[in-house]
Image (cartoon, rainbow, N blue to C red; front, side):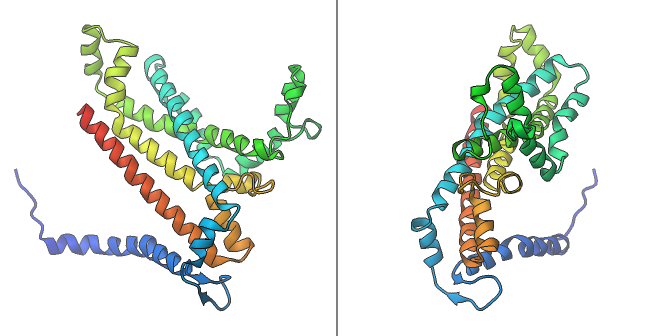
Length: 297
């Protein structure tokens, strides 16, 4: 067998341009954001160096910040604890009972490829009061559940959960596709051998499917968690962070501080906090799943 031998300099010559591009597009903006977080700056005019005052005010003097952190993790929790198990269950059922599943999986994936603006406006219409043609409230009225009707996006306690429901619906098909692909890649011989030994149905899923899709499930968890931490567009389309900051999350709070309140330095401090949380979450998730991989390998 011929082995192509390439010198280290040749490898470096091919890798270096993309490495420089990666550093320029990823690490340089992070460093610049950290520096901007040390400034009192509106993004246009003269800046004043204030050290860690923006970070101190963010952690101790901002009444919106910590509730926004809580709602961000609330969205991430619903995504991981509700959306991913449902996606896994649907993927298993499709793999087991549907003969030609590609069309069905594609239909689940359809909301993912729709514009967030379209989805946000669609669900704003669904959540409207019945007098404004809101479909959800009209259905409740026709079912005799008029007491259950609400101004879903106007009540501070309900608005964030209404948005979470839309986010779970939108990205459910995305995770179904990922986990369905992982299940399809498990060799059928393993299931046939297990069936001969009496492991079928639930037992096969417990002892074969779940352990063998741990690496794929890790991808879903990382994408789900990090995507939830960066949630921005759907919230801005549906509520803009209101009413009374009740749907504000970290990304929307950062945007409002940076561009609406013209506190660019303070918004950069929030961005750095968000980056640190994303990195810490990624490291923690990888650590936990590496332990699972060792357990089932």
